[in-house]
Image 1: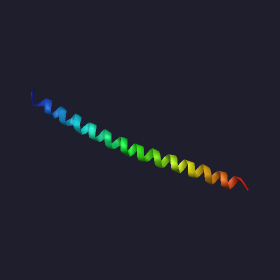
Image 2 (image 1 turned 30 degrees about the horizontal axis):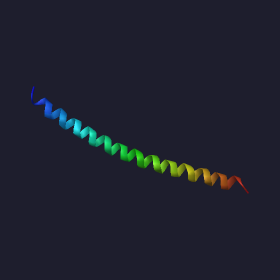
Image 3 (image 1 turned 90 degrees about the horizontal axis):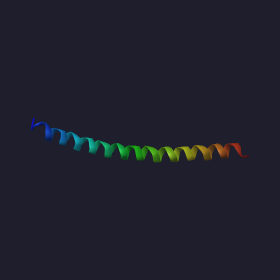
Image 4 (image 1 turned 45 degrees about the vertical axis):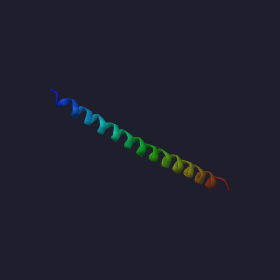
Length: 50
């Protein structure tokens, strides 16, 4: 039984590190999505306005 505790701690540490990486990736994806959507809106506005 005592061998399970460090394993769970290691898994928890790995999970925290993976969560940090996922937050970074999600932030980058969110920023690129915002920039892309604003660019598309600007292009549509410039196309529809003569």
